[in-house]
Image: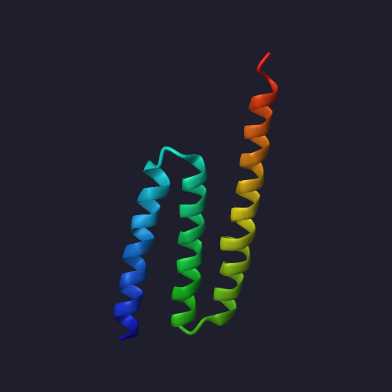
Length: 84
């Protein structure tokens, strides 16, 4: 049962990776990359590695996504300021 769940999560991770690469919207790509890390943390939890799962969820999914979104907003805002 667990192996089937891990396989399904792995397939969803691969689909999210392709979405992150081929999306036209940078915001969608950032969210897809965050989903990859979140699914990886669930897989680590299923594989009985809760310490790695918590680290991946906190750093990989949480902090990295927030930093990317912050940088995206800064770059987007800077492009609007330099119109004139």
